[in-house]
Amino acid sequence: MANKLELTWYGKDEPIRVEPRLLIENAALSNTASDPDTQNMLIHGDNLLALKALESKYAGQVKCIYIDPPYNTGSAFEHYDDNLEHSQWLNLMRPRLEILWRLLSEEGSLWISIDDDERDYLKVLADEVFGRQHFLASIVWQKRYSRENREAIGDSHEYILVYVKDKDKFKEVRHYLPLTEKQTKIYKNPDNDPRGPWQSVSLLAQGYRPNQMYEIVAPNGKVHTPPAGRCWAVIESEYRKAFLAGRVTFGNDGNGVPRRKNYLSEAKGLVPWTWWPHEEVGHTDSAKKEIMALFGKDNIFDTPKPETLIERIIHIASNPGDLVLDSFLGSGTTAAVAQKMGRRWIGVEMGDHAYTHCKVRLDKVIAGQDPGGITKAQNWQGGGGYRFYEVAPTLINKDPFDEYVINEAYDADMLAAAVALHEGFRYQPDSSLFWKQSVGNENSYLFVTTRHLNSTYLDSIKDTMEEGEYLIIACRSFDSGLDKAYGNITVKKIPQMLLDRCEFGKTDYNLNIVHPPVYDDEAEEEEQDE
Image (tube, rainbow, N blue to C red; front, side):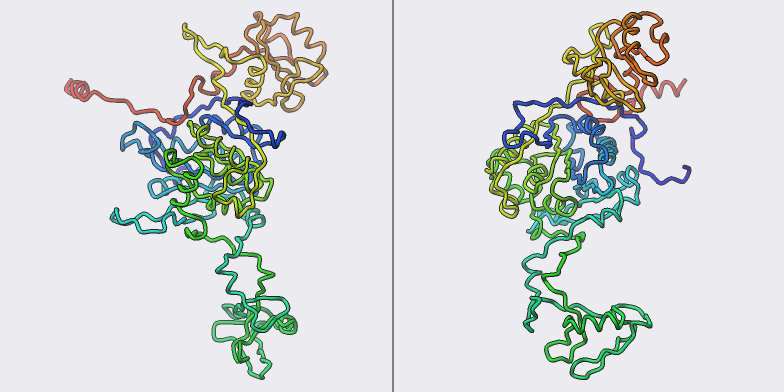
């Protein structure tokens, strides 16, 4: 599109080919004693690889996604220069956002913590990836409760960008915020109303509507009419119903403008808004104290978020039993809060924090040994569980002769499951027919084998196939011409069938950027002189 408005950066047009990987459970690190059927997942590994692995099973199923990515490349990357800083960060974020969006359900929402360093870049990038029409709000979180006097202008807040698949559906399912103690105290009962405490709200509305321009006569005979530019908020018949039900007040002396009674017992709560003060959702100091209570003073995570902040997000955006995902899990806050709130969860952490913080923290939560955060508010006593997964190593390596070979770490089952994942099939071995190993669409199947194939072997398979069934066989090698001999059986070699689709052998997708060529100034000058 010629007039398309977009953010450009160095390396944006370079394709990022991600290898689909298996997720291998490390049963020794899983915690399933209290919940053998748990679906919660703690994943260690590069989150781009993990998200790619999750996509085939969980696309369209995640109700609430919260991520707290690195805020700038100065802290996220060891080596960078100023001209490439934002390019590196954007290349880190874009492919991850693309998969996260595909994982989100139709009623789902995606919440991204960010600060001033990358907020504007992220907003434009997210608008491009998700579609600007899916942007819902930019929430301001007051992260400090005391003044920051070291800077020219003190830094007191961060942002949370919110995107939703469908604004109308999200509005239908999102929850109100509960009233605070301060807000509850506004409700009084000076007239001993049997319906309990109430507060009065205006019966006036802006504008002029003929059927809402009637006179209201107070019990003491005083006549009230709407002032200029206003009308009553309801038609006269609705007002009469409210008046006869005792839901209209004229003030303590009976001379006040008529107002409607709103009862505490009927209050739904508060519609969330974009200002989240520290008194309501916590601050950075409270978050660090939560971490210190769990891990001690010598093992503090750099940038934790308070549990009350994550609690509010999960409360607004999900129900008990819904699936919550955080692919930048950090110290494990999102998973811990989701566990205490009765949500299912998936958390991904690349670094050693998966072992030193996330696992340790979640084990304490499950054991009921985490007294901090939202434990008291949620009346959390412990329970539940999770399974610990590692992202599998690359499927294909290069041998000493620079030839592509299947990784020796893959046994037959892993190989079959991995190739199925690459080809978009569901690994589901049939109990009677060995070749019905993975299922695709419209009677299509995938069979992975490490043996050499000949016509005799294929004939034996063909004799068991029914009309309309189609089979792909992935193997190490086969007799010449065999790949064209059968109309309903396609034979392919591993790894050649996979090489064009993704990049193998890469263990870290953090630096998804192609560096620019380095020019020799002297050679360039000599060339110009010629």
